[in-house]
Image 1 (cartoon, rainbow, N blue to C red):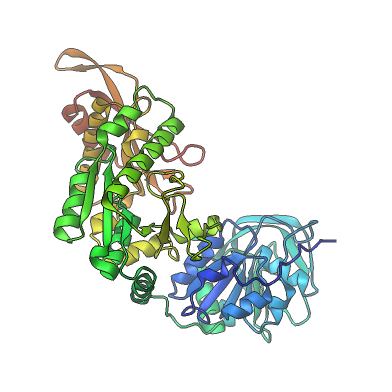
Image 2: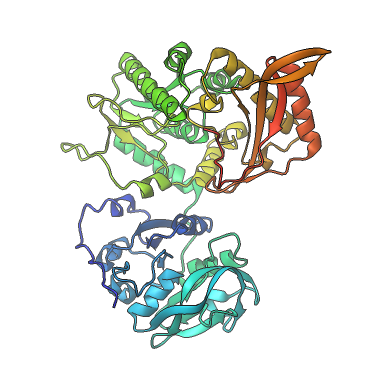
Length: 542
């Protein structure tokens, strides 16, 4: 018999509930997370319908949900079996709220079990693609084509449904692939409609959001901008805010948004550690300071960072030293430019989900920064350097930040910029980082980006970059023997960076890049191509 995990009592300062603003209460879909790798993806899919969604713990009580007034609730999948000892369970009163509920995979099995049905180990598990045979095409499955491919991942099956439930669809191996109690608006699917492999999955989600939950499409970029500006002004008033600008889409979008909200009370600091790509520091200052009239305090710290890495070859030690030096520079420059009351951070919603902990000033109740989250993978700031945090992007996913950036006028070159590691080129140079090696890699990397940009295929890849190896190989140039570095080309296709595949780049493009690098970059006489996926490899080499 499964032992139910105790549900905690209602608490007024629940950090997850505090994230839901009053404007969004009553216009939100809540996902209760049972440990699924797809919980965030469910939230993203719902937001794509312009309806707001949040991921909360499965321990969230019916009373807490009643405070939020959700239009619908989704029970996520999870790695457990519902009949396991200690398997996570939700508050059974959730099914009595009168709010539509959709259980996905584990969530469906849990709903069946808690409402009096029976779940058992399936005779045959079902993993991967399966054809969905629709028995009832109404409500949840409206406009979902019979025979559609759906993504399965389960070893258990519902063998007896609770009173009031009926089967909506089945597969060859799963008699109850979709179920419903229409009277109570309780639904369940054994597959994952949120993944791209599920054909018709988005249609199913839209049916639940619009036709079953009767949500209105109020989660728009314009509405978010208006709300964020109002909230920032109310929080900050006429006090000063410091933002560590990196040139990436998160910090750049945040800079645009804050400047619109508080104008010259925003100070942007760009610390140039010397590991950026060719021309990027200059371009960043030009765009913000001169073109968009958002002042940027440029700090040239290249020599300091390079000196810290002398003789260092271990990649983790590189990251640690770069992070430590960034803190030192940040502290010195913030004191020189300050004082500041607030530190702006580009915290995104996945960061909030992954880390529910917060540091609260006991006097004011506001969150304060004892660590800075930035593109530099920085650790803790000194404890005597305390800021209150401004985090307007903490409700957003990465794709929503890009949409926001476009809406407030951020250039496409930043909005669609390939992901770039915080330590920059320092971890694309295998081994010791030197000024000479940085120049070699900077020139090779520029050629990669230049070739795919002028061919109009830059955005065909998740990332495309060069890596410099610390070894040398023999070559021949102009009838003379050379002994120079090899450069590795790395082209990646991916949806979210969690998994990735090497891109099948046409040979003529690889040939053009190789020829240019060997001919134009002094110190390189060989170019190779990395054909490793993730897993087993990683996208970056260090």
